[in-house]
Image 1 (cartoon, rainbow, N blue to C red):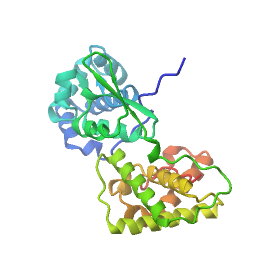
Image 2: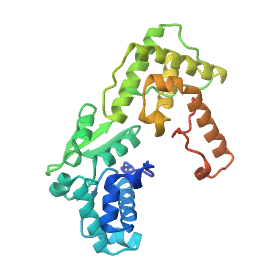
Image 3: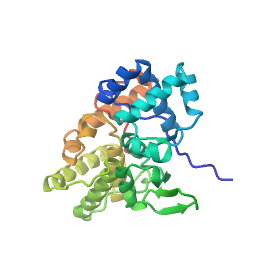
Image 4: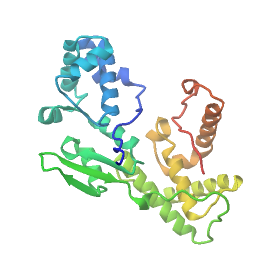
Length: 295
C-alpha cells in the first residue's frame, strides 16, 4: 500500500515584524497579550495539518485553548477579531468555515514548490494563489462533491535532473543556449515562488551570464561537472537557497549576481557550524541564506 502524500509542512517562516504588524497590535489591544500565543498556535496547526487552511469546528477552540492554557472563550474572541481586522480571510470563513489568508497560502506554496505533487481544494484558495496554480496544474480530481480538488505536479522541464558526480565537461555549445535555459528556469522559479511574472531586461541577461560564470568557477574548483544540465541544477539550488531577508525581498538576477560571494560564504559558514554540531539557534541569519551545496 502506497504511503500517503505529505500535505503539511514541518516548519514555516516567521516575520520579524510580526508583533509590530497593525493587525496583530489591534488583536492584542482588544483581546489581551495572550492573543499572540493563540494566533501562533493556530498558525502552527494550519501549516502542520493541511498546510494552507484549517477547518473551524467545535473541537478547534478546545485544542488551541488546551495547548496555550487559556479558555475556549478567549480563543473564539481572538478568532472573531482576527477575521474583523483581516488577519484571516473573512469571505472564505463565511463560505466554508475555514481559517486561512493570502499570506498563509503564499508561504505554504513557496515552502512546497519542490514537492513532486501537492493537492489543493480550489474553493479554499484566495484569488492570487488560485490564479498562480491555474497555469501549472496537471490533474483535476472531481470528487463528486461541492469541492474541486486539484493536484499540482512539478514540471520536469523546469528542474534539471541531478548531475552524475565525477567527470563531465560542459559542452562547448552555445553559451546562448544555456543562457536561454537559465532565463527560463529563473522566470519559472519567480512565478512559482512569488506568483508574478519577472520583467526580463538586457541588464538581467548580462547578470545571468556573469552568475553562470561564477557558478562554473565554483564547480570547476571542486572538480564537479559543468555540462548544461549540471549547471542548471546548480543554478536552481542556488536560487532556492535564498529563503528570506533583503535578497529574497529584492529578488533579481542582478542582486543575486552582485551578492554571489556573500551568499556562498554565508551558506558555507552555516554548513560548517552544522557539521560541528552547533545549535542551529546560535547560527546568525544575517541575510536569510539557507545552506547551499552545488553537488
